[in-house]
Structures are given as structure tokens and as C-alpha cells.
Image (tube, rainbow, N blue to C red; front, top):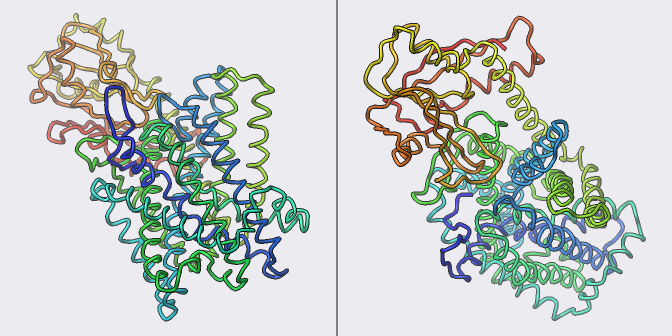
Length: 630
């Protein structure tokens, strides 16, 4: 995430209050803006049958218990225990699960679940900015009805401005996120409390009795309503995904002590308002405020939704970089916007794709109520994937018994399935949007992973084993010339094609040669002292294995310069980097379907160059063309 705050490490001191404020600004933006639409959209289902106190209290009770069960118990108390060296999120959980399963088949299944979850998370990143900004700006229909025709244009302008500012980084903006969200949660909590004081009977909805009562009155309609109730827990995955930035304790404390009470007060306040005035269903959130404060509340809500959208966009950057590092995305252009924090990144390809998709959604659906039909499937799908991976981790890493796993995660799996099933009813109305986005991303990720596997297999078939090359080297008449040659290779046991082509055309070998292989481990970060593994293969020839975590961006020149501490002299001004530029073509008998081959070729041609991805100085690079058929 593009934030300035990182998790507290041993030896560091960070004011507790400062961490909690930062958590509010980054972690809780999405779930914190759900009151803008969750109650209204949920109660709309009862409009034809009449909205009475039973329906109002029932929806309020359902939302309350969804927050308790899904967010508080499942994520805060259980899932957040499963971290990968402090890092959370669906891909970190996938890495943990892959580490504890033994069979190759099981690892593939775990990887597929992780890919599906990551794809749905990215799909959620498209819908969240659209529905959040629209729902906030729609407050103009209440506070200034004469401006209601400008809701759509203003929303589009806000969204475009949000994406335009991404290239500048969010370091300066990030400092404002926390304090603004403190004000936001305080305001919505106070507004809710004032409404509750006028109709305190609404607190009866704390009992699950009303959730059961509205469900038994019309079971099918109540099942449909669950597809909207789940909107109140969107953003729950962010609690887990942002563990790596803040640690588990600040996130838990902020939720239990401030965010959860503020949300509950506001949801119950909206319910109390409608119990006193049924017409408030038009927009119960904004009607909580006095007339004179409605326009300032629109402004505050718009800023809050921008913050929520910024958090989702930053999360999309993090997930995309992790997918690249794990071999599921082609190389992306990763620009670092912060001078001190590794997590402050900007990815132009992701920004452009998200911006276009969000604007299209806003113009196509036009209102937050319509967009609500598209929201939910991606969120509940991610819940399901996280739940399945958690079963593996808690069973094998935490050594829970089968009974414990079944009782805990079996219940949540059933709950997630109910939420997911309820949202599938929205497919025709707009639920197809995240499904299409998710399927497209799954196809992209699996195609790239499969294509790279075939490419590496072809390289192994056609490449010369490094041991054979080194054995023949003393008897060869190859001329050694001054300088350092760095050859990047995906397989450290074979001679890079760039080296063979260089020998074929130039017939020289540098006096010092480094064979460099970059690997990604199933951990978020690798300590600097464990970054490089160096082995001398022959006089002047070394093999270097550079290890990076899946949340890190490789920097080969910096890593090689650190070899001086290991007794391997490296002068960056004497180094030349030899890279193979592959031209991939279909083989006579392709091992991939034609559509998948076409997609892989498109991705390969549009991938960021190795020079840019590994942060190699362009003026020190020599590229050698290689034709590969797969």
C-alpha cells in the first residue's frame, strides 16, 4: 500500500495513538463508508410489501450480527492469527498453505484458490471506488436537490482526479487520511447516537431474535436481502491484507474501540430514524443530519470515499506486484513514489486499467443503488477463498484438530456460502460485472503461469548445462577481456543463451562473470543479510542467487554492489548487463490452446522490460535477441 506508515519493528518506537490514527486512514476506509448505502439498499427489497418496524429492526439486526460474526470473530480474532512473517492478505495466506501441504496436486489446488481470491479482490477494486464516490455525491439530492443533475458529472470528475493523483504518490495525502477518518467515524457515530436517543427501542435489534423474525416472515425475500446486507462488511479483507503495514494489534484495537462502535451507532441511528419517519428510506444516512449540516456532510463523505478508494487502489498495486513476483502476472512497471518506504509504489498499467473500468461502471450504472447489484459477489467470493485457505493453515500449521477446524471454519464456510449464494441472484442485474472481471483475471494469471512453465521447460531442453561449459572452458581459446559481465538467467544450472550468442558473435568472455538468478520466496520480505548467495564456479566466474520476498521489488545493481561485503569485488561502472530478449512464437505443435497462446504472446510483448523491472541502468545493458518456440 502506498502509505507512509509501516508496522512497528523491534527496536523502533512509534506513538500508539499515531499508529491507530494511521490505521483508521488506510484500513477502514472501505468498510467505514458502507453506511452510505448498506441500510438503504437492504430495505429497498421490502418496499413493495411495506416497510414496518419488524423489517427495519430485522435488517439492523442482520447487519449487526454480520459485523460481529464476519469481521470481529472471523477476521479479527481468527484469520489475523495466520500471518506470513507479519504479512497478511490472500496471497500471503496462499503462500502459508502451500508451505504446509505436501503433494504437488494439493499445492496446485491451493495456488488456484489463491489466484481466484486475488482476481476477485482486484475485481472489488474496480467496483469500490465507483459505488463509494457515487453514493457520497448522491447526498446532493438531499442537501441541494437543484444540483441532482450534476451528480454523475461530479462523480466522474472526482474519480478522474483520484486516479490522476496516483502518479505523485500518496505520501503527503496519506498524512491527512487518518485525521479525516477520525472525524468521519466520530461524526457518523454521534449522528447515529442522537437518533437512537429519540427512539431507544431500536436497541432491541441487538438481539438476533429480530434477524430470525424477519427471516421467518418471508424466507425467500430474506435470503435475497442477505445479498445487500453483506455490503456492510465489504472491506473486511482489508483488515487482514494490511497487517503487514501496521501489525495485528493496532488494527484490532482500532476496530474494537472505535470503528465497530461508530458503525453500529450509525446503523442503529438510521434504523431509529426510519422507525420515526418511514419516508427517510429515501436516504437515511444523510437525513440523520440537520438540514444545515447535510451539505458539509456530503463534502466529508466525498472525501471519505476518496480515501476508501485510495486504499483499495493501493491494495490493487500491492496485489499486482505480488502476482508479478509469484509468477502470475507479466513484469509490470513499478515506480517508487516514496524515498524511504518500499511500499510506496505506483503501477501505471494497473492505474490506467482501473480508471477506465471505474469510469465505465459509473456511466453505465449511473446510481449507487444500481451498482449495489454488481457489488457483493467479488467480496463474498474472496471471503470463501480466504476461508478455504485458512482451513489448510489452521489444520496443518496450528495443528488444530479436525473437530476444531470443522466447528470454527465450517460455520463460517456455511455463512460465506449463504452470502455468496444470495449475491448470485444479482447476476442479471449487474452481478456479472465482477464475475467477468474475475474470470478475465483468472485466465490472464493462469495463462501467464502456464506459458512461463513451458518457456522454462524449452530453455532446459535447448540450453547447455553450466557444468559442461565450465569443464570445457580451460581448454578453449576464448579470449578474456577486462570488465564485469552480468548475465541474468532464470535457471542457475544452465548457460544463459545471451552468453552463448555473445561468444558466437564476439568470441570473447569478460575476465569477471556473474551468473545472476532472481528468485521469489514464499515470504513477504528477505533480510538484507540473506539476500545474496554467492558461489565461485571457476576463476573469475561466480553464480549469484538473489532472493526477494513477494512484497519486494528487485534491485539488482544495489544487491550486486553489496557483494563487496562478501569478498566479491563489484564496481558498477565496470559492469555490463547481458539480457536475452526473447521473441516467442508458436511451435509446430503448441502445448497451449490457440486462444491461450495468443493471450500469452500479447502479455509477453507488453510486459515491462527486464531493464526497468530490475532497475538496471539502461546505458549498461546489452540485449541479445533469442527466438523461442513453445
